[in-house]
Image (cartoon, rainbow, N blue to C red; front, side, top):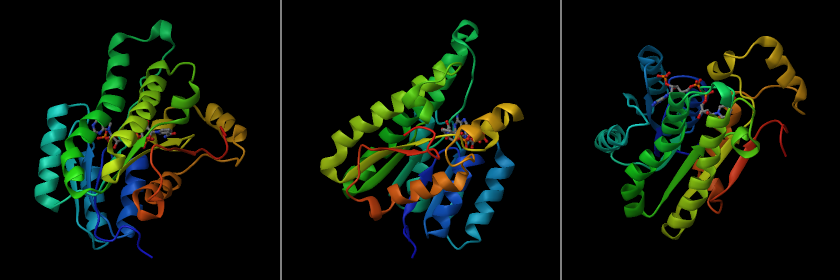
Length: 248
Ligand code: NAP
């Protein structure tokens, strides 16, 4: 059964990692996929081709999620190209890890702007469309770190905790118009973001996870599929942990 047949979806940051995983699973479920990247043009264009070959409409857009103006322009272009928007996935994110003692102001600001302000930018940009059609699903990518904190990631944890507060507020604001807003809190998902860690640390993470493995982009994509589809039509304001039992 295809759960998103004919739905139009925007995913931020899908040129690699979790975003690519979401785009693939959504296309397999019949969704038309508009997605963004920041600098990885070649993999983005490859993904656009791959998704199109699955028989759905797909398009890659270079757009900085941290920019309010670029987000507005992006949504206008997607509306023109796709004719509507049903689902928004705010997935773009970065890390600039350091202990507070060594964390510079630029590292704090970049993480807050790309991870948190982007969610405001994009949600605001799609709001009018979703309100008019009285239907929509917004999914924001938080993190286990946003729930429990992590030494060396104060900027990242603050951005991801901020996403949870934003998600719950938007769920309250837009619920009466049948617009749902949920967050996913992934645990340790093996992507380029986590490739920066040394193998010993990664092995330690895996051993500490009750399911004894890191997650895959598909694990997160499947949770997104559920929250995007009508299968979750009575769920809003929720933070779904997808972490192999790392935090319960
Ligand atoms: P990733 O492999 O580093 O991919 C990040 C994606 O975001 C890329 O497509 C990148 O585009 C895009 N991006 C970065 N800055 C952007 C900007 N300013 N505007 C638009 N797009 C931008 O990361 P990932 O592991 O897939 O993570 C995806 C999301 O899940 C992030 O929000 C992350 O915080 C969250 N998350 C990840 C984990 C994990 O363990 N991996 C755990 C919890 C939460 P370019 O390729 O063009 O740079």
